[in-house]
Amino acid sequence: MDVNSIQPVIPIAAAALAGILTLFNGGKAFYRNLWGTLASVIAFLAILSMLPGVLDGKIYIYQIISFGGPLDLTLRVDSLGYLFSLVSSSMWVLVNIYTIGYMEHEDNKKRFFAFFAFSLFAAFGIAYAENLFAFFLFYEALSLCTYPLVIHAGTKEALKAGSKYMIYTLGGGGLLLIAIIITYFVTGTLTLSEPGIFSVNDGAGLLQVLFFMFIVGTGVKAGVMPLHHWLPAAMVAPTPVSTLLHAVAVVKAGAFGVLRVIYSVFGVDVMAELGLATVLAIVGAITVITASTIAIRQDNLKRRLAYSTISQLSYIVMGGAIGASVGIGAPLAAVGAMAHIANHAFTKGTLFMCAGIIAEETGKKYISERNGIGRRLPLTMTAFTIGAFGMIGLPPLAGFVTKWLLGIGAGEAGAPIFMGVLVGSSILNSIYFLPISYRAFFMKPDNEIEIKALKRPRNRPETSYTMLVPIMTTTVVCFILGIFASVPGLPMSVADLAATFLLGR
Picture 1 (cartoon, rainbow, N blue to C red):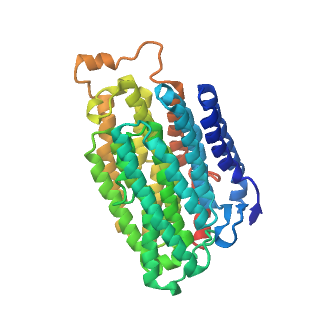
Picture 2: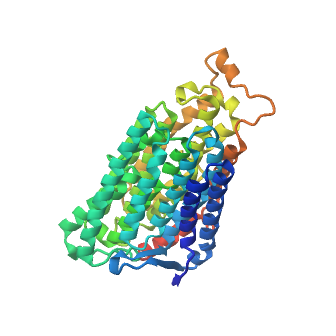
C-alpha cells in the first residue's frame, strides 16, 4: 500500500543540513559535534518511525521535484531500501560518537565532519530512489562526497588513493549512466518499484550487455573482483572513513545497487532464463575465495580487513544471484544476502573501530607487532575477537545467520557447490582472523620495552569512552542479530519482506 508522506525526506534533509551547518559553523568542537550528533539521531528516529508501516506492508512515497516522465526526483521507501537506510542510520549514530573521540587530535575536522554527513545524505538518497535516474544522482553524489574523506590526510599516498578511488567509481558511474539511458529507450521506464522492468523479448544479446554494464557500474563500489583495487588503497584514510566505506555507506551502497539490478531492474525470471544469475553467482564466489586468500598475506591490519570486506560483500552478490537463479527464486538465499547488509555492517564496523583504537593507543599498524596487546586493550581485543568470530560464522553471532541462510538457499537452488564456497570462506576467515587474537592474548611482547609500553596507567580507561562505547554497542548488536534474528523489526524480518515482494512469493 502506497502512502504519500514526507517522512523519507527527514533523514536526507537532516544529513544535508548537518553538512551545511558544519561547513559554515563547525570551527568550534561544540557546534561541530552538535550538528553531527543531532542529525544522526534525528535521521535514525525518523527512519525508525517508519518501521511499523514497513512491517505492515506500507510503502512511503514523496516526490521532491517533477521533471516529467522518468526524470522525476521521487523518494520511495520499500522494504529493501528501508533495510539499507535503517542499517546506515543506526551505524551513523555510533560511528559519529566514535569519530568525535578519534578525530580529537586530527586536523581539518570541520571539513571531515561536513563531508561525513554529506555521505550519509547520499546513502539515504540511494536507499530511497524510486527510479534509476534518482539512484544515479545520489550514487555519484556519494563518490564526490567521500573523496575528501579518502584524501583527508593530504599525503602523497592519500592523494594517489583518492585519484584511484575517483577513476574507479566515476568510471563505473559513467557506464551505469549509459546503461540507464539505453534501458529507458528499450523499456520506456526507469522505475525501481517493480520486480523487474525487462522482458526476455527485449533481446538476449542486448540484455546480456546491459547486465554487464549495470553490474560493473554498481559492482565497483561493492568491490567485486577485478573492480576492487581502489578499496585496499583507500585504507590510508582515517579509521572512521574506513568504517564509513566498509560498514555504513560506500560498499554497502554498491552491494545494495547490485541487489537492485538483480531484482528491480532485471527480475528473477529474466535472470534465470538468460543464465545471468549463474554467471554472477560464480563471479561472487570467486571473489569470496580469492579476496580471503589475499587477506591471509596482509600484515597491515586495515588492509587485511579491506580484503575481508571484498570477500564478505560478495556474499551479498553471490546470495542475491543464487536467489534469482531459478524461475521462482531461492528465497532463503535472497533473504540471507539482504540480511547480510546489516550483519556485515555491525560486525565489520566493530572490527574497523577496534583497529582504530589499537593504532591510536599503541601506534602499531602491523599484525606482527601486536604480540600481547590484549593486556593493554582487553575490552577492545575482546570485541575484536567476537567480531572475528562473527566473520567466521560461528553461532550465535549474526555472521552465522547469513551463512546458514545462504547455505540453505544454495541447496534450494540445487547448487551445493556454493555451500562449499561458504565452508571454504569460513576456513580462510579463521586462518586470517584467529592469529590476530592469539597474538594479542597468548603471545608475549618481544622485549621489555614493549612490555612497559603496553602497561596502562592506573585509573585510566584503555581508550576514550567515546570510542569504547560504540564498539561495545556494536558487539552486543552482533549477538542480538544472531540470537534474535527472526524477531519482527530486526533486519532479517525486513529482508524477508523484501524477498517476498521481489521474488513474487
